[in-house]
Each structure stands twice: as structure tokens, then as C-alpha cells.
Length: 428
Image (cartoon, rainbow, N blue to C red; front, side, top):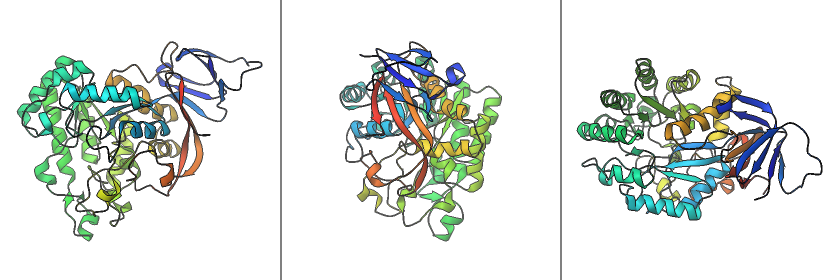
């Protein structure tokens, strides 16, 4: 492999506390060196001029639904990886709610084999906690971790049986992987389709109260405290949840958590009730909740940003708010939405990169999230100022279920590298 150069960019790397205009040389797919001097007679085919752009470690998303195997009319490993590359993600972790669910090494091996063949980015499977994700008995957790899963989750559903969750957390602790929890008390959320609030009442739709998430988080933290398991809490969406997590961290609980871009960008007042692309779980909450999520990202209570990319076919989403499935796509819009936090001076650019790369890598215990010499050259280069219309023809995901379609967004990925290979080039 030839040497490759990234020149004149502003390099931000939280792992080295590096924020500097400097050049990068890539050799054999890895970071070879940083240098400041100019290169004479450089080959036009083996460099990128990143002047005016930010160069960062490749983004990592710990919460993606690839729908493969079994639900490939929504997404495939190939199409999901293209969406990831467009969004600047070089590593993604895929949730187990496939068909059949990823509850055994056979499914994990399928995902890993197909990823090697079809994926542009690095894919890390997450195994199910319970067999068939039915909440009745444990899946083949140990075997799945040994096969390559980086964590366990029943995301899409909570594990309602506390005894099973206790047993799973003990196993996760022994295996030294996080238990990634969708926290929800289903007896309270019931058949809700939207946040319980003024919009649900105005439109006579069943609501999902904040307390359904908060009680789920409380229970899971208590079990995590008792077992010592690393608990990672998915898609935090309420003010109460942020307070609970902050208090638990203050007393030393072994927990991390994430927020999705839609929860710190939109609120229930933005919902077009005729457009079920606004339907997601957890739902869009109140402005007060949205502010709490932003504050949690700012003060470090919320560790990372994860998209909860959840593709669904158009015909499925056209059935209206009551019947349509929960979820929206998010890989391709995560960066521009997250950059609003920087523009509004809620977090620094360095802190944003940290939440999109360095910290997710540490949580998942994967070799990524850093531009240190000798590391694989997984790199994202983006223009924080470029505006673009997020039209359907730009979407690489197989599904188009986003409430942001035809909206102008600011912040565009220009190039994405995986192992030193240019997998996305905005010029093309």
C-alpha cells in the first residue's frame, strides 16, 4: 500500500489532547507520523488537502440496528455500512433484534462473515441477553462473547425479569463486557406511541410517561450496583433519568450512558402528527427534557452520542402513528445535529469528538478512537460549516424514515478512512 497524506487539516484527537494544524502520513493502513513541513512534488493521487476541515478519529456508534439477518427489506449490512461511511462512522455496533435475534454464535458468525464481505466499516455484534429476546431464559451469552460479541443487550425491549437480569449482569461482569440496557417499565408505557404530554392529549394518542424510563433505569442501576457489572444505559431521554444517572455516578456506580441526536435536537412540539417518522422509543420529550439531555452532555453525565439508527421500510411507516413501528434512521445526520451543540457553545469541538470516538471505544473495549502513531488509520474529515439539503437521494440507508428529510443541515463529512482506505469521498 502506498503512503497517503492528509495535509493542512485541523487535527483533533482527544486521546492525545491534540488540537493542531498538522499533516498526517499513513503507511500500510496505520498512522505513521505527524509532520509540519511541506512536501515537494507530491503525487496528486495519494493525498488530500484538508484545509478548512477538521480531521478526527473515526466516529464510533454503539447503537445501530442493521436488521440483518432476516429483515433486509429495511437494511442490510452493506447498505448500513454505506450510511455509516457517509456519516463519518468507521466502527458501529449492531443490536441483536434481527430475525432471528442474535442469541447464539451461529448468528454472530453470520454477521461477522457478511460484514467482512459486504461492509465498508468495522462492525461489532452485540449479543442478546435472553433467548429469542423473549425475556424468559438466558441466551448463549458466554458462547456469543467468545464468538466476537462486544456486549449484551435486548435492546428494543427491557429485560423485565429481574432475576434473569441479575444473572445476566453477573455473567457480563465475569466476561468483562457491558450490559447495554433499554430501560423501560412496560406496565407504565403500555401501548403508548408518543410522549405523555400536551401533544398526546391534544391528539388523543396514548402517551409514554417519563417515569416508565426512569423506573427502568433505577432498577437496572440497583442490580448493577449489587453485581458490579458495567451497565450502559441506552437512549436517555428525560430530565429525571439524567438526575438519576448523575446521582448514581456520584456514589461510584459502574455505569455509562448515551443520548441520541434526535433527543437533544427535537422535542414533542416539533412533531408532525401526520408523519410517523417522528415516532420513536423513547419518544421525543418536552423542551425541559431536551435541555436536561444537553446539560447532561455538557457536564459529562451523558458519556457518548449514539444514533439508535433504526431503519424501517416506507410502507411500514405509512400506517400512521398508532400502527407504525418505532424508530428513525440517524447515521447520516448525527454529525450535523451534534455540531449544533458546539455552535450553541454547549460543548467544545474536542468534547464532541471525544463523545463520538474516544469514549465509545473505551466503553466497547475496541482498538479505535485514537490517532496515535501505530494505530489503524480510521479517520473522519469533515467541514463543520458546509450546509446541505438532506434529500432522499442523499440517503444511503435502504430505508428513508427520517423526520429531517428536505431539511438544511450544517456540517458535512468530506472523507472517511478505514484502515487507511478511503471508503467515502464527498467529491464523488
